[in-house]
Length: 239
Image 1 (cartoon, one colour):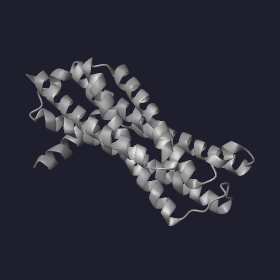
Image 2 (cartoon, one colour; image 1 turned 180 degrees about the horizontal axis):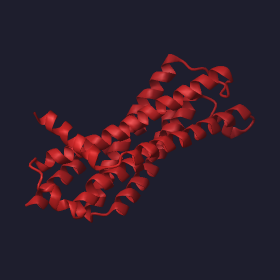
Image 3 (cartoon, helix red, strand yellow; image 1 turned 90 degrees about the horizontal axis):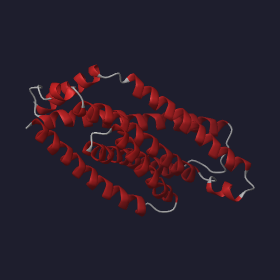
Image 4 (cartoon, helix red, strand yellow; image 1 turned 120 degrees about the vertical axis):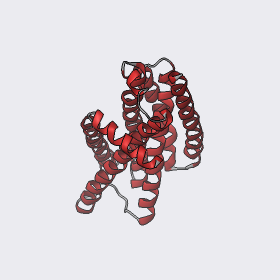
């Protein structure tokens, strides 16, 4: 019953907001990332420079792409949280929220799940389309002096999945920071700062996964604490 209620609440949230804006944002992010991907590939193709070594393998290139995508989607997720949570609880909709005949934690869970679905789903589907386009063109006219292997693909997609969840965690932590003063600007700026600082660590996955996995674990714990804190505050607001 709880799952059915959450699905109904998610459906209500979808009807309440214009999600086309966020899908358009995902499309724009995907196009920009595709542009960066071909830029990195062209640097590798040109060769002759020290910088070209950094882009000489698909693994290295995609690690940089993951870093860029993580920043972009962390910001997008923070924008969605700002709309679905910060604006609602800070504005006149606050009174309407508290008239819902459902547990406030369940309502918040529905909002977080909707954002997670759009954010993580958008990053994975956008990346799949980018990867497909790039893979096809590389088969026709290769730019990178490297070959795709099954191991490469598994590594790229496992890292992508980790980065997508990390972007969600950053969004939740940024929302917790913005929730203190009910500030949309604080939420978005916090996401930009946290994600940008994380990008350097993500880029080290070209050589070792340990630094990012360590950071990922810490951010996951902080995001869970942040989420619980937001739930607690919304319940207290009701009182």
